[in-house]
Length: 374
Ligand code: SF4
Image (tube, rainbow, N blue to C red; front, top):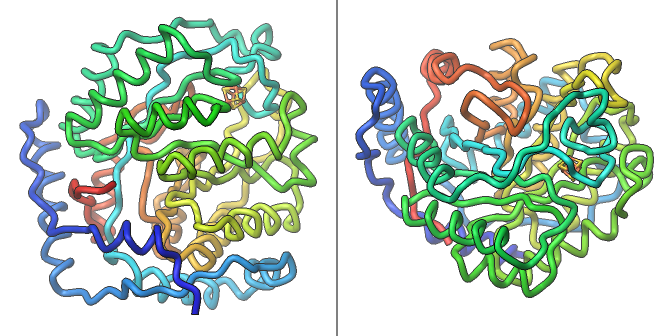
């Protein structure tokens, strides 16, 4: 039996959830968040969870294809069983994502509004790095509204040492001082930069693989799949958690989706966080005219990710705004246990905060309260 030690330690450190005590500027929001967090605490004591999971890192593409191709209800059933075994059932983490430096990215990711390659057609204006105080004020607001994780994204190809990176380190320290998990996505990193982020207290680093190794070149030509894997390895070596997932709906095949999941699940240890995104077809980007993703394909990806990476947080990420309430609930049933919460996802619109809380309450789910983590 192979046990995923780092992931296991992460879960062994889970403590009794403290109440959300910060005052919220919106009383009704505060009341809703506290009520559904309280329900989480009650539900928690009633559940027995298994913290000695078997994880594996030897998936083949055919096995993943078989998993993705199962009858939908069987797939969701299996994913739900895995989810209930290793996670607090019905608990959803709220993560807030802020663009701290927008636009003019030298990379050519075909889905991205922030690429300088498509600036003429998207019309997105370049912005400078936000002030540390400004970012921390937004983090405080996100915390007050119930978010326990604050993610900061900068449209850089790679991090450059200097004033801007020093400011990001100050942001990371500030977010951690608020008692929130801090995540950053800044492009490629050297080992020294990953180590400095770790010293600043960064909880997790997001660096998505986006798609399969085979389809990747159709979407991005300015850096390689291996570049991405190398950055992930440096993050892991620095002792920072890995947040890594992908996007569906970019014209890839089901086999590409299977290869993405295979690559993610064969990382050892698994990424602690796996964002599953549906393409948001931004006008002016090369993928602007692609048809919307079938929500059931997204449910299948969430379910397969849950089964293949049983301890990871599976994040329902971009594209959620286009999903019906029912499709989102099906994703939660299939093992999603985190959403991005707030008006914006970097530069694209996100679901309304009140709608999200109403959905969580209506579905009988609960907001994950803050918990100490590494
Ligand atoms: S690296 Fe990130 S910000 Fe830059 S174009 Fe790609 S997705 Fe957009």
